[in-house]
Length: 225
Image (cartoon, rainbow, N blue to C red; front, side):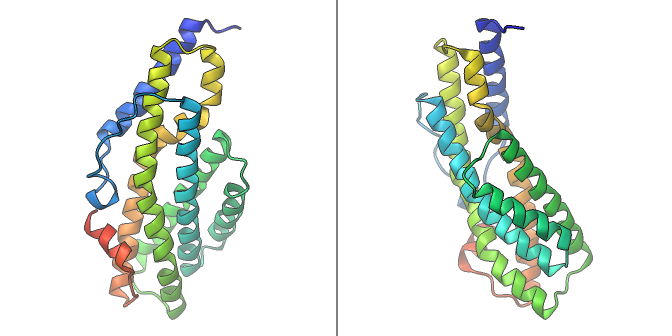
């Protein structure tokens, strides 16, 4: 079945407004980007904007996965360690499409839930656990701070797609297919980032209560949460 140009454009705009609405309701803490001015991008090339958005997501997510591997080791969550390490390699392979992004978010979100459950039950860490926590904090701080760039890139991307669609995007159906990865990241950023913030905050709290040295960038980020 062929999709008419108008139908494809309407669907594209619906996805754009959905993502834009999600970002309008999501505010980052000041130290992580909440105080940044809104993007002045007036459209631009949607595919190039998508590339920047996905690149910023991969950069941030790679750090988050590295932190989660260490936290999973601290609680002997061996199944999670294996899944996270495999996803690290997949994410860094260079071939990142919508399916790969979805899998990354799913694996990371599941790990967050299991780690959070363990954190809620066990506030005291073993000597080895303290070491894993200390090693995880720089990665986690970079990953969470990286969402500042990601949110900015998502705003530019949605503006670019909206501008292109309003201007009569040629081949709208094909364009929708090309922009699936960017639309997915833009849509998922608010809820996924909040989950990361919550786990990061708990991780810093447990680290402090166990005498683990918390790096200054993590402390600064925590102060703005």
